[in-house]
Length: 207
Image 1 (cartoon, rainbow, N blue to C red):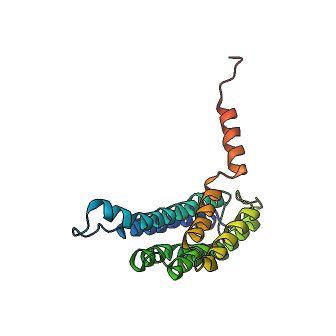
Image 2 (cartoon, helix red, strand yellow):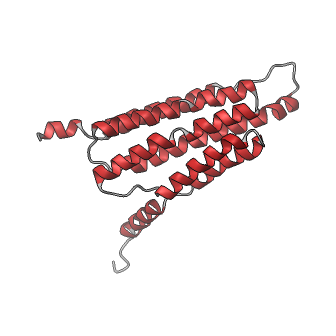
Image 3 (cartoon, rainbow, N blue to C red):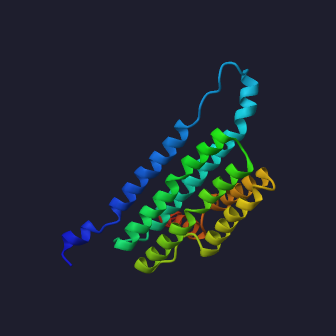
C-alpha cells in the first residue's frame, strides 16, 4: 500500500473529530443550566436546583470518562478500518443523547420515568463502546486499557438503575454514580505505563 494511502488511514482524524464532538456535547450540557426565576429566593432556588445540578455533574463525568478512555483506546491504533470508523460514530451518537436525557430530567423533574430514561441513555453507549473496543483490539493486537469486566460491570449497573428508578430514584442515581467512581480509577495498564515512563526519565544516580 502506498505511503500516502497509509497516512489517510491514520487514526488522527478519528481522534480529532471525536474530541470535537465530545467537546460540543459537554458545551450543550453546560448551556442547559438555567438561572432560577427572581420570584424564588436564593436559598430556595439553590435547594430546588441542587438535584438537577447533581445530574448535570453526573452527565459531565460520564461524558468525560468516555473521552479519557477513548484516548487510551485510540492510542493503541496505527490505522483505522471501515468498521472502526462506523462504530466510533455509533459511540458518538449514543453520547450525544446524554444532554437530551439530562435536559429531560431538568425540565420534567426527578421522577421514576425520567431517571429510568436517564439510566437507559447512560447504558446505551456501552454497546458501541464494546464493539469499538473489540475492533481496535483486533486491529492493534493490544488488549484495551480497561478490562472487559469493568465494561460489563458498568453496563450492568446502568441497566439495573432503569427498573430501580421506579422503586427509588436516589438509589438508581447512586448506581449510575457508582459507574462513574469505577471508571475514575485509572486502568492498571495506564498506571504501569506512567510508572515506567517515570523510571525511564529519572536521572541516572551514577552521574
